Image 1 (cartoon, one colour):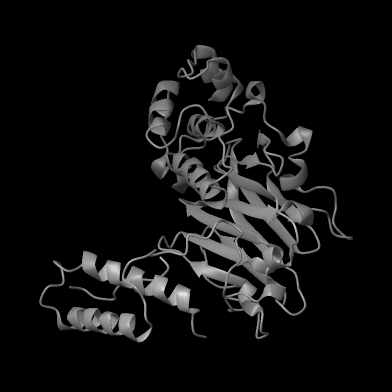
Image 2 (tube, rainbow, N blue to C red):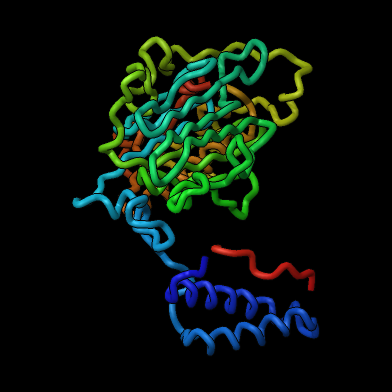
Length: 360
């Protein structure tokens, strides 16, 4: 299906910009020069100006011109949509739809979301024998049938496989006219998948970080109600049960068993070393930074710092205008000053398109 004129010109300018950046590298390559000539022809044929935006720059949840109005939640809504966000990452840390930040045990299979439109379940496993820390090894999303827009689709990611398709091999909602409202987007980083469900105004991002997974989602607040057959146990909506939450004074410090494959990136972190490692990636006075330090102390696995970083970046992408860091109580009490953590804390914490397929 042809792109609308405006989007076509935007894509063409992005392609032109990409080729110009490769001019020196591809000088003398005939395929490259043929592409440059063809781009100039297309500018004239479609009456596109070479000046203008090179990306659509639509705000999160904005109406997508490639999705029919009936299958676009924003187009159907007669009021300003309010979005809620949820994320799960690391050991694992949960940011709920109410912007509460919790650290939980939740070993095994747990529901994050379960309503009449969408179900999300995660499976968390111990990071090693003898370790009290767990991390997410499997994520399953069920996008329920939405007549006229999408058939039911199931997406499943594991530590061994982050597929670019639903379990039935498709990448959209089905053969019907509005099937483009549900689609999987291929990201430049093959360890990241984005799923857009325009008919319910939702976007999910799944990352593979080392041996584990992270999950972030944005949904309209008015679809958060449970389905008829769901339970009240939805971690994104209600948080972790009290008996599954980890308080600082309850932090398990059991040593991991030696000789395990996952120990290849494990080391013993002091509080100072963990703080320094996290400081390279994250702002200091927010809960993502505190989670990073927590995970390095409890697991000794350096890849957990990237989980906190990835979760923060995904939350920024899904909510750039309203994103705010969640200050820790320690940071809040110290103003803008770097939090000072003493010895006690050690015990408590322990494109749019691919430019050119050329090898110039």
